[in-house]
Image (spheres, rainbow, N blue to C red):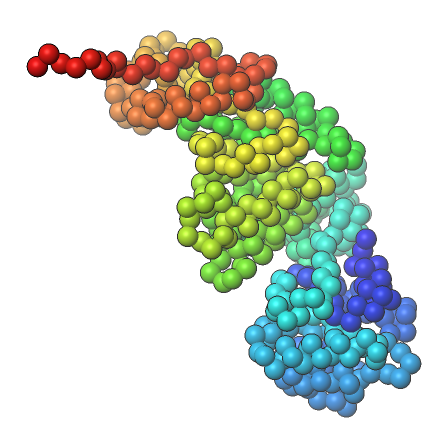
Length: 493
């Protein structure tokens, strides 16, 4: 449902308090202006710079330089037999004042009989408790593919500038998630650089936009599954699920949860997955969502998830999720912020309709609540164990090639090594110009430094997770180390 349709319904139902959440005020006002013309409604706007004014620039005899007088002007603006709408731009900045809150409250209540409507237009929703039950919230959605296509056609007006077929689909995929102004700027930049619309310039604008927001980062690399050794069952499962994902929500791939010791390739897999299925990879840093103001963290979480939805189809990666929501399981003195953020994320994970494939990674499953990994939030929970002999051979071959190390050079003993440690050994050998065996002297495997925690992780995953290397349930082959027996008989001494 479009913004125009939602607003028409709310006005017809006499919702006299309406809050429009929008990053594109001019477009939202344009839609509202067209609706008012069609319905013969009177539209007046106020902002702190221009005061009261008409959309077309018409003069008003009423002066309202301050926000309090702007709200009070509704009594003068109302018509005997008509509908009057007052749009207050960025009015959330003034709702910390008790006088203004009371004036808005009175205006919304009186609007029921006078057919006057208070519309707050702002990029975020910050409704004071006194007004929460009086305002209906309407999100102004970012442009969809058809709207982006119209914007592209409006910018690329010369023959040859607008691609067709698959090339146009690639351009629209790159522009997905941008606002109307951002999309127009990206298309214009592409025309200046390449004399036609190409995805590369648009991806550059999108990367800068996400970086400036501080909520998400965009990864685009050239590495696919061929550059990642092992994980054959996990690769086959995700590739098949995503390539067959189609249609409605029932046949759409949801995501996977990856559990493993550090250094086993979870993060690298996420980045390679995007290239393999030709989707952008968004990384969500939950720590960056934390805000200093009350309710800011929860609001930033919702904004980030709305951006993810707008950029679909894509892959969303949340690395080390048990640390990201560390306070959600108790023990953190954050007044329940982590729990509320996790609740928002779990609700979205279960209910979202967008084509977003979520990959969460974790090193310590005991710090996650059981509801996090239940069915229908993920398509599968995989355990990524330390690589076996066959997987290690693949990883050695990959990194020998990457760092220019001869296949004839003997490699060191790699028992209990992870893929990250094999890469580190090859990198150090090339960096220090030493044999692999000498470079290995600088490494202490994590299976040695954290042997107890890895054993606990394997025992927990046994029978509970899918195997990343073989089809079916993961079974732990390594037996837990037995404790030294203690003689309980009393000593003769």
